[in-house]
Structure formats: C-alpha cells, structure tokens
Length: 491
Image (cartoon, rainbow, N blue to C red):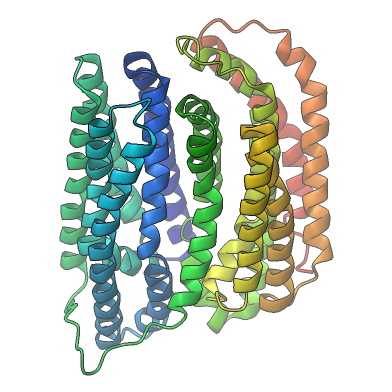
C-alpha cells in the first residue's frame, strides 16, 4: 500500500472516530445534567481526569515500544518484534497491577472529597467501574496497540473503537431515558468498551504470523528511553488533566461541570485537528532514517496544510460558539453555563495548543524524548504553578490563563526544536506562517462577528444552516493562503 493511501486511510478512520466520539460527547452530557444534575456530570468528568492520571503507570511503555518496533517491522524481523512486544507486555502487566491498587485508593479519596455533594458509596463504585476498562487495557491490549501504531495501522484501532462508541451511545441513551441509575449506565458503558479488546486480539492474532509475547527473564529486550517518554506523558497529562481536578478541589462540582461542557466542545475540535496527524508519526518515523530530504518536503507541506485547516476551524468556532452554547445548555438550569470569558480563553488556548501538533508529531517520530525532557518539565512547572495561583483569583478562567502562558512557551519551543534539530530547516518561515494564520483568524472573526450575532438561531437546524454558510465563507481566506504557500520549495 502506498504512503499516500496509508495516510488517507488512517486520517479517514480517525476522523470518523472523532466525529462519533464528539457525537456521544454532545448527546450524553446534557441528558446526564437534566436527569442526574450538574454535580453528577461534574463528578463523572472529574473522575475521568483522575483516572487519566492513574494511566501514567503505563506512560512511556507504549511510546518506547513504538519507536523500537519501527526497526523490527521495516526489517521484517519477527524475532526482534516478538522480543519488543514481550518486553512491553511484561511492563504493561506490572503497571496494570499497580493501577488496580491505585484505583481503589483513588475511589476512597474521591468519595471522601465529594461526599457533601454526591453519595460517597455511589462515587466509590463509579470510580471502580469506570477504571475497570483501563485495567483490561493494561493486561490485554497495550502491546497490541503499540504494534498496530508502529505498523501504520491505526485505522484498525480507530474503526473498532468507533463501533464500540456507537454501541455505547445507543445503550447509555436508552438506559438514561428509561430511568436507570447512573451506576447502571456506567457499568453498561464499561462492559461495551471491554468487548472491543476481543476484536483487537482477533485481528492481531490473524494478521501477524508467529506472534509470541513470552517474556524471557534471562535475555529480556530493554526498551530505550522508557523513562524519558514517561516524563513527556507525565507532563502532558498533568497539564491536560489537571484543570478539572483543581476545579473540583478548589471550587465545586458545578464549576467542574461548566468547565467540562466547554472542554467537551474544544476537545472535539482538538480531536478533529489531531486526525490530520493520525498515522503521520509512524510514516515520519520510517522515513527519517531512510530519506531525510523527502521527510523535510513532506513535513513542510503537512505543516502548511495543517495550519490552514487550524485557521479555518477556529475561525468557524469563534463565530459559531455562542449560538451553539445557547442551544446546547438550554435545559441545563441548575448552573450558569453562559460564560463568555471562558469561551474566549478556550479559543485562545486551543489555537496556541494545537499549533504544536505538527512539531510534536515529528519529535515523537524521531524518538527525541530525552533531548526535549527539560522543556516538557518546564512547561508543566509553569502550568501547575500558575494554575494554583490564578485559580484563587480568577477561578476557572485562571486555569485557562495558566494554560495560555505555558502553551505559548512550549509550542514555540517545539517548533524551534523540530526545525533546527530534526529537520535542519529555517525556524523563521514556520513562525511567520503561525503569525499569518493567527492574524487571519482574528480579522475573520472581527469581520464576521456582527453579521453572525444579528442572525436568530432557534434550533439546531438553524444552527447547522448558519454553520454551513459560515464554513463556506471562512474557507475563502484560508484556501487562498494555502494555494499561495502549499507548493513553495522547502526552506
């Protein structure tokens, strides 16, 4: 299969997955808020973030295994492949055992922290149920995911996951509407998600001959840069998972629910943007060692395409967010979900954060975890320190201000590192492209704000019509810009 076909296949499958994930994210939370209350919705969102922290116990294993597998798969060395997978599987099982213990501790602590807003017994059980699927992931799928990712077959992961999410949406929607308890809904969700591991196992066993994950204690394979990759994933998870945790601890579960609604929308946008990078890490990982010149050429075009798409997405978001929030939270009456300041800050943070995706992709493909570890630690330090200070003054908005400061530093640094130390490219031209995109977004939103605000939106059909018109008009400046720069020579 050609490289272009692999890219299209991976991106298409991941886009489908993100659309379905966003669909579930937009359908279920309003039902949960209306049926069980904002406090319950905030509790569920916070639990997801707490569990995300616990998954750090596997962080670094998969990233190190993926980089190591590039060589084995390129050389068709099944023996080396099996040794790498065995080492990864061994560490995943150790991490899974630790995760199970940590999950019980988390359930106990979180139940105690939120006991005044939610039943402690209910919270304890929900944490255990929601974390159960991660235990299965540790023990049965972690090494398989690394194999499929390294072999440029993320479309398999995306396809199976999309089916499981569709089933989860349908079942949870029916259970909520039928009046079942939130614990019953979460239990059903966990069972559905667990079923997908059987499909992953079946595919891998059928398509990879001679697969053996037996761990030889006497001659083990030593995964390189595991701890360095762990550091990157640790800092990333601290930054991206800490907001809801801090809001739950320092503010309230209702504040967490409000934040979670905006985070849901901008998280869906982030996933759509990440779809353009799906599969690119493996492709860059293979080509960096065999054809650096072609890698530079492909990266420059990919970066230009990505930045223009980012500009279009956030222009549409800035113009369409307010009417969407009004419709989406219409029945959520137990908390004030109309927060213009949060919306503006989320927009700024999203633009700066997601500008780093191309640079981050090439850094991960090159396996430069150790070299970039100090910068990752500094970003996390800036973010957490500022968050702890700002949340006392500005509440949830302070969390976003802290993110904006840390992302401005790290996104610029990532672009500089990838250009100078991996691709041997000029740093100035990609930086100028960033500035051009940011200015274009600001100008487009400024011009379109008044006309969009004057249009009445009474239902989702009206909003969809408005979105189509807005999207088509917003395409013009970014399409023109892409035509000007896409085929320019590599700098």
